[in-house]
Length: 301
Ligand code: DON
Image 1 (tube, rainbow, N blue to C red):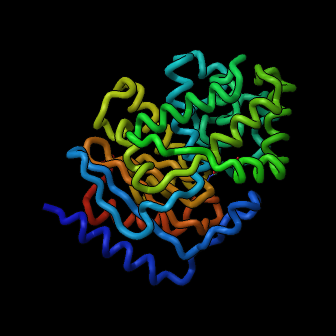
Image 2 (cartoon, protein in one colour; image 1 turned 120 degrees about the vertical axis):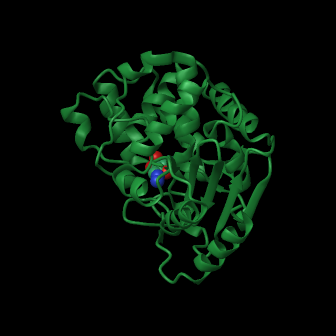
Image 3 (cartoon, helix red, strand yellow; image 1 turned 90 degrees about the vertical axis):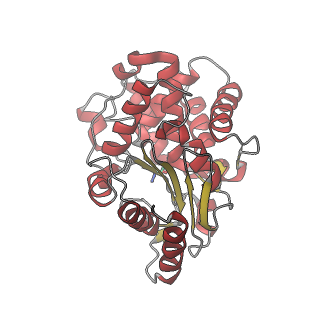
């Protein structure tokens, strides 16, 4: 039997020694203060056990990882009609790119790039007050992780709102193309707050159990599709590289977190705040690569 605890402590030791830790995101000023030396990893297993190493109980900003949970909510509420407003193809461009939107008439390539996630948030908002929808997003995540303590870091939300010019550009462009149904600032405000949800690796790994197939929060057919999108689009223009190196569906966030699932086997969360050139956690990706290799986990056989 694989000794997962030993693998995790080896990974923790290796990551602690790394000299190039990537660059902490600073376009959201509040995230620029985070210490790049932090590292945590948590693995939730079908037995209910959660194995950890490093700062696995420390909260961090989940940022784009929230897009997985809002997609699950939107599909639950709208079903396949969501796909009239957002595509399911990798974009090949940065997470906050504006380029394709004009040539593709305001329909974002997929729900994980910022433009697509704004459409998803706009879809679940649909006339409801933001406070109610944020409550619903939090309820979903708290139920998934079995932890009522998970909350939004309002300072991070405010910080992103103050500097969120690119997201405003994306949202206004889509509004001009008829692909926003709520007032643009309302959708943006809700999106900034969902991105500012704070979770630890333990909470996040537990929240990912439904994607690993350990509980039936949503239908298995829907889980498969969310996992397919995580594999093909979850790391933006580095999704191919993540599939190549790790071989598992994963979703990153600029807070330095990654959630990945080995279907039927594990839900894994890592956190290392320094990012690579594509805005994904540099050492987090390396940790996932080591774990998948040493545990023998891959969706590719
Ligand atoms: O909208 C943004 O730019 C951030 N709130 C989230 C981006 C993000 O996490 C990209 N992921 N690696």
